[in-house]
Structures are given as structure tokens and as C-alpha cells.
Length: 263
View 1 (tube, one colour):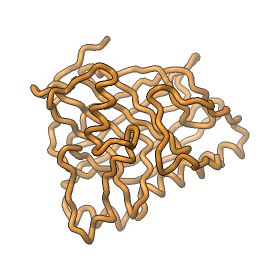
View 2: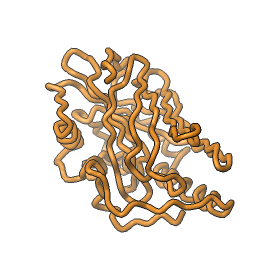
View 3: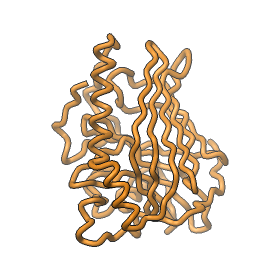
């Protein structure tokens, strides 16, 4: 087991990151996509309070994370950690995520950097959502570079089975955001995802500018994933069946249990 490292969060939350999300597939055919969006870095214990007129542009709903049944996002995180024998003893958490925009959200990846009272990162939680309305959380113990490995346990893409391992590099965001997720299977790395961006202060003007440039930002992410899935299917990439039964940490989103992925 990797020893957790002291990785301070060098910028305060909340903050906004204007970022680019890229996916690269290398086998059985090469395919790349790139999508621009923006994400929030927030403290789930002190979520941003927007003026009422702007509230449709950013809402952080406990139903969108973990089991969706807890009164707050932090309560959901603490329950997940307790189930894995982890206590933060009141330590701070920062969370990188998409907010609900006009009532809709899709979060391919939400990351929680979980600290003890002394500022030591005790763990990182990577919460993954797929387009079937399901979610799964991975508990990670990163090294000093923010890198950790974990077995793949959750069906995400219809073009990959549930096997192999993830190698994730998730350093705490600073002035720059630089996250990388590699899928490693026997014979190589068939898939890499990156999230890279620049920090901006969470001000009203900044949010308005980002929202005007990327309206319906989370809907656009979901639509882009489906569109590229259709393109891959039409290019002959075989679809892998989705497992019938979820794993222990796998949850269905209460709002999306009946959603299907056209790809």
C-alpha cells in the first residue's frame, strides 16, 4: 500500500477551472476527442452560495453523488469512507466536479481530496458516472506525485469490458488543473483521458462569462460522449455487454435509473 503524502491544496475553494477534456483510444482503432467545459473546485462543507438570479447556473445536489440518499455531499462521502475503514477526523475535503446547470448535470469524473486535521491527504476518492445513470467510487491512496492504481470495477464505455486497471494521476489542483487517467489492460494502454485547465476565482462575472461561452455545459458533455459513441459504433467497434448486477460500491442515480445510452 502506498503511503499517503502531504499534498497541500494551494488554492482556496471555491474556484472555477476552464478546462479541456480529452479522450484518446489506441486500440483496436485510434480515435481522439476533445471537449471544452468548466468545472468547480468546492469545499462540500462550505458550498458556494450564489445570488438567487444565478442559482440555476450552479447547484450542488447530494442526489448526484454516492448513494444519493444522504442529506449532504459530505455526509455521503463520510459514509463511503466509513465503509472502507477511513476516518478524516474533521479534516478538510475539496471536490472537483460539475454543478447542475439549469437542473441538469453529468459528471464523468468527480474527485475528492480528503485530508486529515494536519493537512495530510489520507485518501482520494474518484467517483465515476456512466451514461446509463450509474456511478461507482474508487478509494485511492496516491503517492507524492498524486498517482495511484486501482482495478477497474465499473462498466463505463460500451467498447471496453470490466477488466484491467486504472492508473490515475490526480494531483491537487493549483493554478493549473492536470489530471490523467490511463486504462491499462493486457498488452498496453488502450485508453487515456486527461482533464487540463486553468484556475479562475469564483466570481459572479467569471461564472457568467463561462456560462455564456459554454451554455448547458454538462448537457454538452453528455451529448458529446453519446455522439462519439455512435461514431465508434459506425466505424465497426464491437460493443461489450453491460453487466447485469452492480458491484458493492456501484449505485444507480435516483433520477437516472431508466436512462439508456444510444451508443
